[in-house]
Amino acid sequence: MSKRPTIEAPYGTLGEWTADRADMRIKCACGRTMNMPAANILGRFKGDGEVSSKVIRLRCRGCGRRGHATVSSIPIFRR
Image (cartoon, rainbow, N blue to C red; front, side):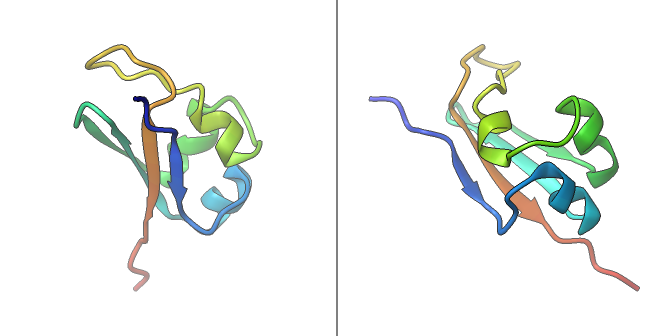
């Protein structure tokens, strides 16, 4: 049974995510984890859009599956 992607962050769009300067943690169902800096989010996903519609398109470089990612935010500690 496949697990649907989940979004554990209070952001509706990628623009809101980058404006808050929170890094993104992407974890595949196979266990592979990747942390993406906030500055790279819009470039990697080819612009702004709904987080849920962009996450579904991610493909794991480890197992090759698509649509099995869990996305959560990593807050940046501001000084």
